[in-house]
Structures are given as structure tokens and as C-alpha cells.
Image 1 (spheres, rainbow, N blue to C red):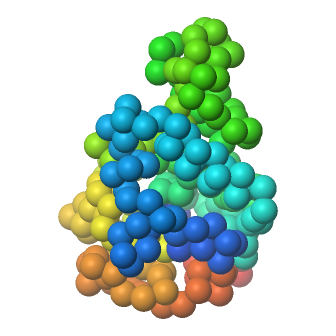
Image 2: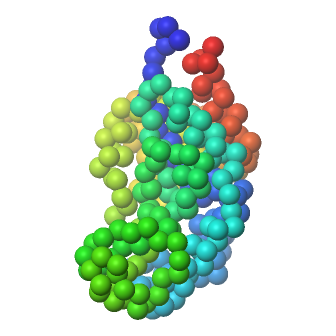
Amino acid sequence: MAGLTHPNLIILSGAGLSAESGVATFREADGLWEGHRIEDVATPEAFRRDPALVQQFYNLRRAQLKNVQANAAHHALVELEKNWPGSFWHITQNVDDLNERAGAKKLLHMHGELRKVRCTWCKSVLAWSDDLQTDTDCPECDHRGTLRPDIVWFGEMPYYIDEIMRALETVDIFLCIGTSGVVYPAAGFVRLAAEKGCARLIEVNLQPTGISGQFTEQRQGLAGIEVPKLVAELLQPYNA
């Protein structure tokens, strides 16, 4: 390893990372999200208009996590995290906990987490695995009906934006896995990385996206196959 540089690495992962585990992708080609319009289940306005529908929607998604497991791509990224000698950031748009189950530690959930809830009254964020009802009491402040999924909805500011923007200032390798390329600000990260002089911009996806042309390298195929191969390639110089 003598003389090797230690590049700064950023990973951005999306729904394609967890799809092979059986986690439903963000939305289908017809624009619906598990049979619902985005406007009906994933906006602050929807929650104010019909909190019972929104709570039930996320209850079902939270319950789904009990029936899925981390796949080979999740485990490969944890191997990369543990062995990467430079700065390492894994930013995920996913709200599942499969990266954590695979052992991830350096992980930023920019769109929140299904197994957390937030109190709109006292602002507490709590781990939560069961169903959430419209009249559930907040364990921290005892207010009733103030808990909501700790999910970043459309029209809300993603988490960790300041940290992400600072990391993009010095990124050397930007790896994008299983994202749709249509949800901002995440879809704009590759352009920002390129503007900062990032040497390698790598996309892994089942098919080309609207931002594929901004990458210097593309790996097309299932994440569970392509990500472990790419991780082995990235770590090879440090394992020699």
C-alpha cells in the first residue's frame, strides 16, 4: 500500500439497492406509490388532510421490513466502508434499515427512516417498530396525536444537506447506486461532484436514467451482482 493515495469516496444509494431484497421501489411507471398518488401519502398537506391514510400507508411499509433481508449489495457496501482507507460517506435515499442490518455505521438517511417517528410538538425523534395511529401518545411529552413518520416528504428539506454539500467539495470518487435520477436535490449531486473536479463518477443501475450522461462510468445490471464486483475492484489496490 506504500505510495497509494486515499481518495475521498461518496456513495449515493436509492431504491434499486433494496429492490432485490423485496422492498417496493419508490414509485411505479404510472406515477403511483404502492397504489397511491404521491400527493395523497407523501406530503405535509396529505398528512393534514387525511392523517389516518398516511399513518396506515407507512404502517404497512414498516411492517414489510419484517419480511425482508439485506442483500449482497448491502453487504458489499459494508465491506467497502470497513476497508476504505480514505474519507467514506454513504448517503441513502432509502428509508429502510437494510444497510444497518448488514452492518453499516457511516450512513446518512437523507429522506428519514421508516423505523423512526417524530413528534410535531416536542420535536423528539424515537425508534418505532409497531403501528402508529392518529391518537398515539408521544412517550416524551405525552401529547396525543402528534407523532408522524420520520420521513422527509415532498416539500420538506432533506436531512444532512449541509454535511453532504461539504463532503461533495472534496469528493474523488462518486458512486451512485440504484437511483431514479429524478428526485432532487439528490439527482443533482453528480453534477456538483463533477464541478468540484471529482475524478470518477460511477453509476450502477438496471437501466440508463436521465442523469446517466453525467457519469464517466456506467455499470448496468442488478445491484446484487454489480456492486460486489465494483467493490472488489475499488479495494483491490489496497488488498495487494
